[in-house]
Image 1 (cartoon, rainbow, N blue to C red):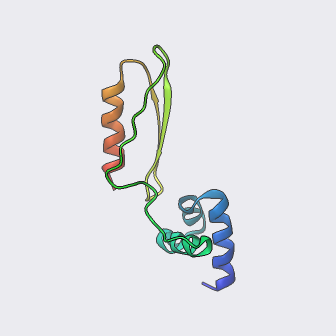
Image 2: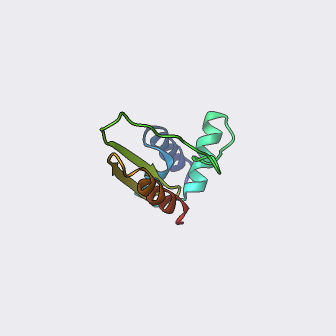
Length: 99
């Protein structure tokens, strides 16, 4: 692919994210992430830290919306209602581990 097209893809990647741009344009995610890192003077790294943990809490009696993106571009939107914490955690874990 010509350099000027990669430059355009990097510009879109800054605005919309590497995953969305690589999917929309049909270009390699890893190559785009590397070019984004070079453009910003950073070493490319994973979007989600390996083995990372995020604690979520909600107000009693309220629901929350959990959105997760995998590096392969799949997305999950999960509406979590009071009392469904462990079930929601299992669904989220299965989604993130399935690649």
